[in-house]
Length: 342
Image (cartoon, rainbow, N blue to C red; front, top):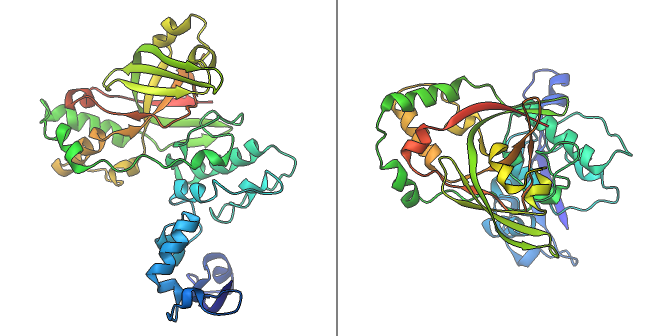
């Protein structure tokens, strides 16, 4: 049982209207009690909100980090984390899984009971990208939505954790190599600084990416009973990687010529946002070095196929696609582009 002992409201506006729109209740003191009204685990703490043991237990139970438990603000920041919190939630009406997150993201969208859960979740995710350009919400595994190929059909697709940070020892294997041309590195940095933010409008995603053309595709294993098909893929500038799909690649990518035609339409891509470099637009030595370190890291990649009229469609995978750059030369030869995905 939760007992709120005290709270305060801190306004960011000077008038009543500003108070109602801009403040968020900040609970100062929380105590947890058992059924017989004894303090949880008989802890003598006067405020469980500052008790490390309680916060650790809450984090394990909810998957929510302690910094959010103690200082939460609605908004579109850390969007991937907020979606992961709700990834195991169940509701009586499927659409409510999306509607219940409107407040957490501080979004004002119409509630349209009767629409499919895919469309409800798709409208939510589209608005998050529209307002923030946050590409972390593209990091999911599972079935693609009919609303948009870059969005999942169900929020449970966010249950899988993103790739962990790369150990420093692994990063140094590439970054210790000096680029043959500092001009090439500055040119790449300049190109990435010029590209616009990701945009979502009219169910179309405009996404800046570093793209890697697929050159070889081989089927490694297939299990029709579990709908698991694993492929070995080689793409320009990347080490060979494996991708597991819920269906045959020839079918899900609409390859009329079989795997032999895959190299003409398939790409492995790295979505890009200016925040990937901390929002810096400088072209000094520190900025270019930071770019090289960032691009040398393994990354969660997307696989998509080219359609007509310069459009693309994401191919959903059953596991995270972890891509590794080959070396500094391959990084400097990365293709920067802006893609329209439907």
